[in-house]
Length: 189
Image 1: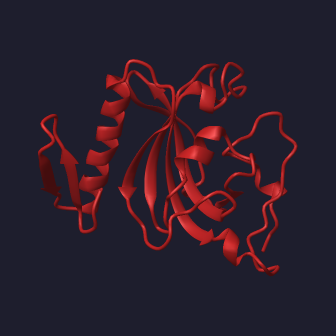
Image 2: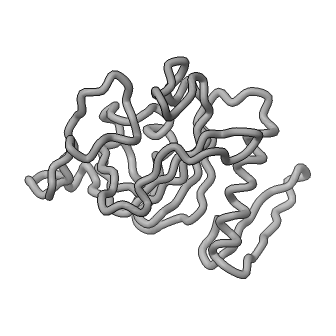
């Protein structure tokens, strides 16, 4: 993914190709389909598949950085995006998280590394990196592969978190780490 609705890729013969799309939406939709095709063509998904949709600006995030994120989560069904099981896109509250704190599923911890403010990424997360055999009652069936579109809206780098103005992230009483915490566990600032 490149700025101004460009994408570049290498083919099987290591020849470089560039595609320019008419709109950001067309570029994003194409990138999503590329990621889904990668998932469908791999014999077994044993790690998180990431595909940038929009690059964002600034420094890439790493462990210890605090983020505010908008996201939508789908079940991966019939070789594509299935039912939406959670989203905060049309809600007032963004999800606040600190990378590396273990408060979200492992697939998010890995898949969001390197993202930049304003960046959007598609993550396809195998069950072992999500909720595994237990699933989430009433929402995520056991052994489900999950797909998330995540957008980083705000970043507070760990290096900058010297004062009390950093994003506060608190834990929540939950048996399974989740990218979908209730808003009660977060401060209101």
